[in-house]
Length: 166
Ligand SMILES: O=c1[nH]c(NC[C@H](O)[C@H](O)[C@H](O)CO)c([N+](=O)[O-])c(=O)[nH]1
Image 1 (cartoon, rainbow, N blue to C red):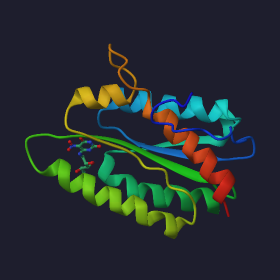
Image 2 (image 1 turned 180 degrees about the vertical axis):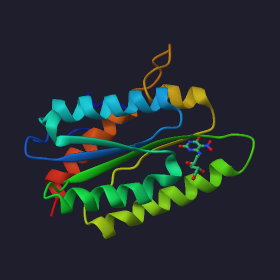
Image 3 (image 1 turned 90 degrees about the vertical axis):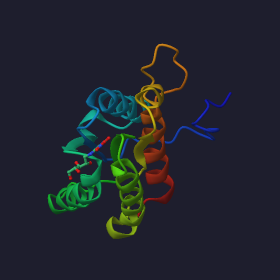
């Protein structure tokens, strides 16, 4: 039975030889922490070794594109290149247009970043109209109405690295 949101996993990909980076914003940290934990849990369940999951942070979601680029470059320069990277941020609509501008610009920048870094850049940006929506997508609402989307992102990072790596 396919878990909603994960789609049908046609196979569990072997992540045992992968190095995956997570770079997360620090806004909405309770939700961020749950998403990061979900991604790590899922990647470890697919064989990615704990020491091969490298976590860094940036102030907010707007900093994710630049932070991700520098993170990837530095890992490569240090001789420990990543196979994929998961930028994670939580944007929650406020009373201004800030949300719209950051959501749109950061999404496009992360999509375009893949060609620049030549590896999968998983879309880990939650763009929510309410805090309740974000809590549900991090699997930390009372109703347990949705699963932790961080798990999807971890699974996507492994699959994309195995199937479409360099
Ligand atoms: O990650 C977020 N950053 C946010 N703003 C900060 C932004 O990402 C930058 O860090 C800041 O503008 C400095 O560049 C948010 N809001 O403003 O609401 C938000 O909801 N989430």
